Image 1 (cartoon, rainbow, N blue to C red):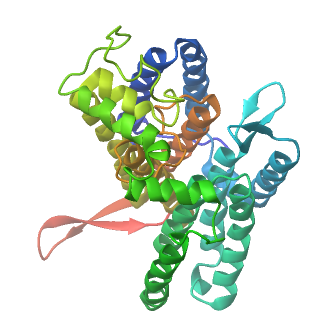
Image 2 (cartoon, one colour):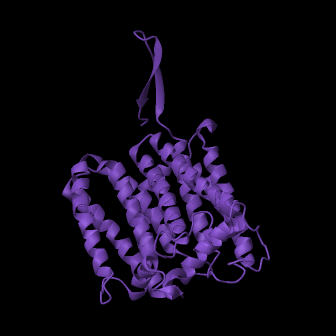
Image 3 (cartoon, rainbow, N blue to C red):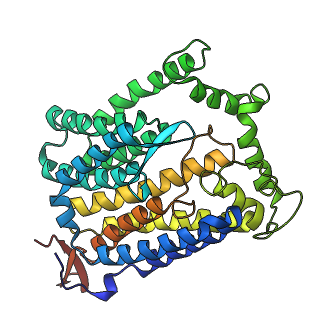
Length: 385
């Protein structure tokens, strides 16, 4: 489980980026909802401790336990539908003394599961049996998450699966064939969804799409998103300052509901300005890039796939959250990694970063040998057994 690691292989920049982004999140959360700041601080302490512990724990142990992790995740998702806590019309949480969101844990379980699955069937990846088996497996949690309902998390989870599958070595012939079907299929789906008598998605989901396309006609549904855009723009370059009492503040006027979670970026834009928003976007991007870089140096495919999965999760979820708050995407509820309030989300993300750190501690071995013809050192990459 534990190995002898070399300190020079530890990605301290990744740890620093995670902590810095989380601290910014705690400050903005305190301004958005003071009562949540202490719990988020406690969550960061736990998250960092768990992240450091997992970073020293051989990630291949989790890969070997992938079926257990997957089944536990599915059981928790079923439990959400049976005994979950309903908040705002959606049942996404379980309360067992501590309230948490199983879909956050499921995203991590799926990344680990398919990292091991695609490594196991590496030579047969592009066969119908392996591909259809993977699709059947991922369809179970996707269906359970969608039924909560949580369309945004369903989309993000599906995208993560696609990234892992593509990175594992999916044939370009299959990719082109799928795109040839998916692109016109998406156009047809969108045209049906925009019809007033459609039954493919719930009415409130259609209203969110329509309010994004036609905010003037759907003013009530667009109210939240439009106020978010106003808040971000009003911050200008350096913002109005944290915990300000400005009477023209969108946050202080309660024009944004749940500002500490889904619309935390709007609070950051209003109080920290463009500079603060740029810092958040940059740190999210740095974390994603560092995960990918570590994955490229992984000693085996499953480690590389874990890093790609975690990096894509941070990138996709950040893009979706920021896209919603800035009006670039239809309104949907999803948190901003390491910034939004949510102890479960923060700790789960830290756990995944811990896995990435451990992958980085077990890089490919590099053996240098002299090339007499060119009189220089040539690196030879060997997979460690």
